[in-house]
Length: 309
Image (cartoon, rainbow, N blue to C red; front, side):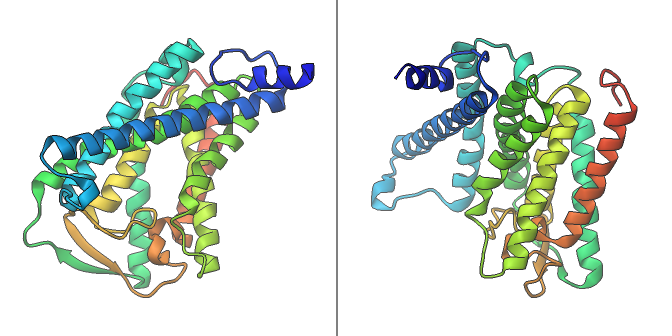
């Protein structure tokens, strides 16, 4: 009975202890991740519902905003969710923003953003060259307001996922084991995306899982490189923004586009274009992310961690 009580006490997310066996600590960090993630998501859903009612709409009767408005409300609601996570972090973990990964020069965010833009453009260009993507031109009536506002939304969306995975999980675990920190953060990043995959096409689904693990590794290596999550946040957000709001392509299986600048479409469904899951299930993305991970490993091995690019 004492062992059970000790185990429950160890894995409680509402304390900041780490003096326990490694397996207990990993379980505790996963629970913290889940509590913060689902607690913040529940609060975010409450905001969306409250805004509907405040504007005279009853979503329970099917009275909803249009798709673009819902997307913007949801994505900007992520800012509130990040605030809730930071509050929980300070109250229950009793740690600072720096210990969450918001440390070092903020300019590294721009480095990550530039890397994200470069990697996604290269990945898409390789698919276009093979003919697996069709370029349909620029939209005649671009919803400029939505496209611009979605940049802010994706900045918050990318930051939320990085705060959870490379912030909470990696920052808590890496002091005990960097390898375990990277592995657990990759698993917790990958699993929530699996529900949007089409397993009727096993090769595409497997490629998508590999790419999720690879991009998580890249984010983790950026975090280690800069001793901060700023660069990972920048890369994550700009990758998603360019893919979805600029190029008009599927984002992690989401094939309904709010608004974009360019019109592009898949030609067939295969491991070249990633099928319905999109470029993130393409073998070209595998190659691009694999190369990026190798370069970061090389940089992290050869240069002191305190040195910034």
